[in-house]
Length: 122
Image 1 (tube, rainbow, N blue to C red):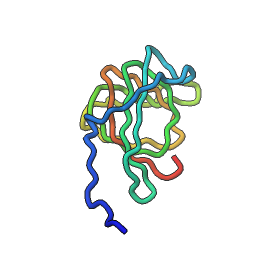
Image 2 (image 1 turned 180 degrees about the vertical axis):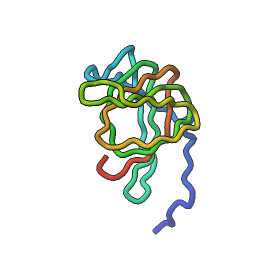
Image 3 (image 1 turned 30 degrees about the horizontal axis):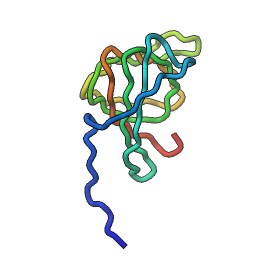
Image 4 (image 1 turned 90 degrees about the horizontal axis):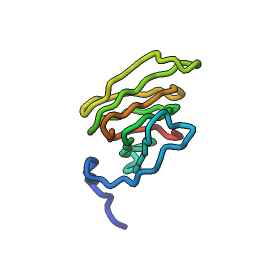
């Protein structure tokens, strides 16, 4: 039986992420593409890297904490009728918490890359 790895390392800025077009029902403008890689499990949480290319998309969030590594974007919280109720600017170094069920619109000006942590079942 081998010993567990003491330190696992990934360069999240250099990690190659194949990107795919955002599904048509989530596209909110332009030609955004998305890529993701799950990296580790810590307890019941998944840690990974997510990237969204220039453009805009709609999403319904899961419970998540993330740190922006690169890029610029705005994430808007939408109410049931689609009106913006909150607006958050994202840039490198920003840490955010998203709450499950929140409807959002992501508008990316420069490709956004983040490290995320989501709970089990997300």
